Amino acid sequence: MITDPARMAPMPVHNNTDDPLWRKLWNEYEPVITALRRIPLVTDVEISGGEFGITAELTDGSHLWISSAESLPVDSGALKGFQVRRGHHDTPTIDELVYDSTEGGERSEHGNNFVPLVQAVTAFVTERSLAPRLIDLVSVRLDAVTLQHKTLTKTLQGPFDDRLAAVKEYGHWTHQLKETGWRCIHEQGGVDWPLTVWVLNGEVATVHLVLIGQATA
Image (cartoon, rainbow, N blue to C red; front, side, top):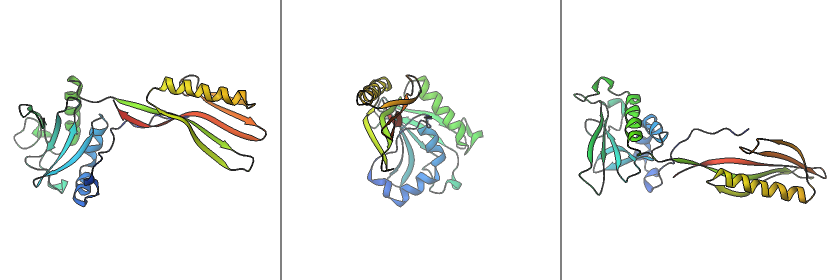
């Protein structure tokens, strides 16, 4: 049985991920970052000019900047609420407050609780269609046991960002097995997540679709 894993935006890719300070900030604010990635927003920790914040990319080229009354403290225990602003590196006129739970902010009663922050961001990006769409990446895979009792795992085709295309390719490979003398002894999954088990001269092979991850569309 194939289970759909939690959908999440990909990790950022850059040189800073090896920096100890970047790693500490990522770990300190991991609950916030993970929640934003599940929206799903590509989220990163930014270290610039002695200021620390969390950035979340939006589909129109703008971004969210998550900080506190000032910069995010390195120690999250010293946090004094959250502030979220939408900005754009190339368009300075895009500058709006999305959420503020710092002292004197309109959501100050929530303080350091990140759940209302994530709820506010989710509502904001949903209303304006600013969150990317995640698509499943699917491959056709063969898992087999040979006469020498050795296991064999092979990706036959993929990955596909269209599951129907993957199903079609799966049909091509199972047809080839049948044409070369393999006998199907088990079938399940229908056209959603097809899986078949085949035997030939003591060898056993399973052909199935496998979800290998997601990508942003």
